[in-house]
Amino acid sequence: MKQNLKIPLIIAGIIGFGLIFILDEEQFKNNEILIYFIIGCVLVVPIIWNFIKGGVIVPEQKFQDKMDELGYTKRKVVYDFLAPKFQEEVNTFRTKYWWTVGIWLNYQKQLVALRLDRDTWDEIEIPFDKIQNVEALEDGYSITKGGAIGYGGFAVGGAKTNEISKGLQVRLVAGDISSGTQAHFLNLYDPKYGAKLNKSDPNYRAIQECARSIADEITNIIRHVG
Image 1 (cartoon, rainbow, N blue to C red):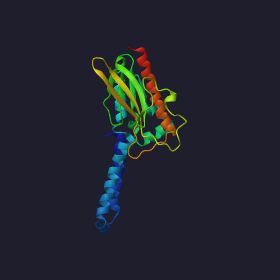
Image 2 (tube, rainbow, N blue to C red):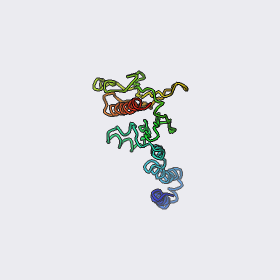
Image 3 (cartoon, helix red, strand yellow):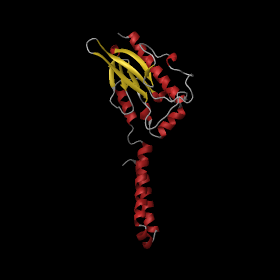
Image 4 (cartoon, helix red, strand yellow):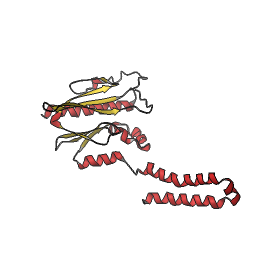
């Protein structure tokens, strides 16, 4: 058992048994169900807290470790573009894996790895010379085609304050004449569970900047590899 789990369990046990001895026999009988409930909570809460706070399972870190082992020395993911305050909030609520969507680059082997969305942990590897095109899709509609996503591609400063984003993707097309092409969609912002984000929100601007950065990187590869 991990050391950081032993201490809260010991404390919880002492509190739990202390409740039994503090209450007299008549109180114990009259409140038996309540007592068991309290003891159960006292014993279980530290375990749950340890899981949330200590990070028994941190999938995004495991994924990053795998990318490091495979030689991917550079990445472009949404999390890295978020403001420090929002990063702190993301870490507090253990939702960092929602925002580690994007690309990883292995320049030595000339490979790009894609993590397509928040629920995917199997990367897609694409050789540089197979990449054909990149474009952005905002609210399901294409913003730019056939090249880089420049600053003119997004309505930066032009979005109304109350305009809510329905999603932001980067579409990457790969393939060749023998195998044909396949489109891959990076869901950089995929609102779920009632989430709403104004297009004028600084956090949404950060997601847009991540999309631009990914497009810049991919466009540079298309231009210089082949």
